[in-house]
Image (cartoon, rainbow, N blue to C red):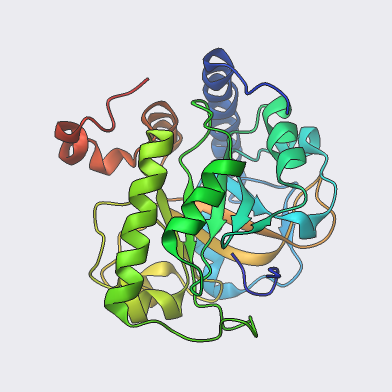
Length: 286
């Protein structure tokens, strides 16, 4: 999640806390939405971007925003993050088959204490078997029923001297499908696929339509960069500013309304997929 940022416990919160997230965060978005309509400004006046790009200005019109983080953000004041209106956080957990983010447990527990809905992501290393990677993920990521669905971060490892190669499309898809299946078996939640423009074009275009997609596009709207891809989350900047986080942080937008976000929190599925996936026992609610 982010080539420029990457280098190769306490009890989990209860279901009641999950419900409190929904009760507390939806009003934040609704209140912000009313203010934005009145003043024609951002939904999140406390947040910013040190290098804003005009091509992604539309992201500010989406009422539900969140962040994704790793150890590179350093210590985080999660209470301030939540007070700024942050409605979700995806936290780097694992990479490949032997790397655990040094701040994963600290961030996992801190976000939960502050009432920020959070999920874990795994960064795929293409020179390690899918079996090894999922064994490592399950060893290090708590199976917390109150967490957001897990994320599989698929990008080429061009930044890595150990694994610069690109796999054939069929081989990459086979690995991805195995890891998605294992994540779903482990957590009981439909995983989210995170990807960038290059990997999507090389491997994912026209593939895996039954999974929610989280796309990275920091200079244009996703519809201009990802052919025929319905997206659920949009990473629109890597130079964001959010109270409680020192320096740059990735900012993200959810595609829909606060009501659709509440539906996602209660079902762990993109609301647009509920009817289609209900017959598989998914998206049926808590």
